Image (tube, rainbow, N blue to C red; front, side, top):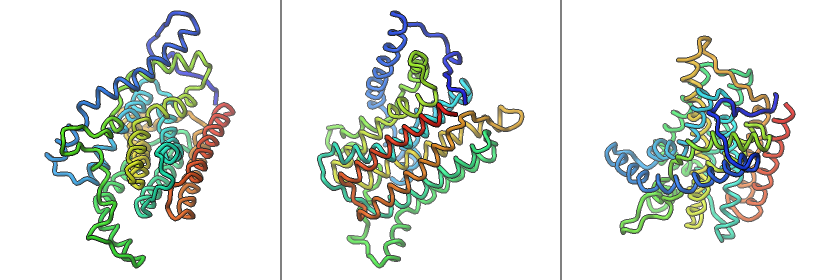
Length: 364
């Protein structure tokens, strides 16, 4: 594939100071958007989630798999919508895949490295459940894009797989009970420890002090500034747009997941930290990519196929599946404990993935 950028797809933006300004100003504006707009959303998003949960009588599992996932991944969804309908480029695809890699490999390593804890104990069932669905999500994505185009029924299959994930989340407690009984263990105190749910730490405590985690789990409105401003930076640095999407933009969009997971890990809720990151990645692949492709193929394209032009993406997905399997095996061999050696191993795998993706993207 020819390495290039899609600056011409967006309105022309000029900055002073020549090439220095064309690189520096977009970076500064993007960083500013990451910080300021997250704070703005902080004042409104969490109270809205609380109100919706009460009005709709949603359980924590269902709310986390739908409302919370949609809120956390709203930037990825809008990135792919803009990319598919407006720019017709790969930046949305690369961003979602890049965010998934960052969530699965980088965030666990950061959790153990900066949480101040030597060992974070994990629950086997949530990690197994989310890992299986993540592997299934990546597998169906690899199958869908293998011929360079996505049909409406292929994208619909992605949305149906996410519906199955929601169904599993709905009966999560029952499945935990069955798994506990199958391996000869009984649930203590009537409910498993993981019944605390994914949403509980995100809601304010009974006092008037806002929960610190709110600031890290919000929809990020920087999506409306990051693509146009990152394109001049990509042009100035001569970086392919798919590489820009899977590195800088992906890491920036994953900041809320990173912050929330670190805070949850500090509270000793390691399973919740990983469920937050992996669950968000599942939504990112199946919905943030499947929904725009389905709308584009079924309503806009006359041939009902959405073209995908990133030739190196299938290699990246294969590497991602291998990375997930290795990560899960590492946790199994370590008795589902996240410690320093597991964190370093995940960090090394993340660095290798980014290196291999850049190599394949530039090569192809």
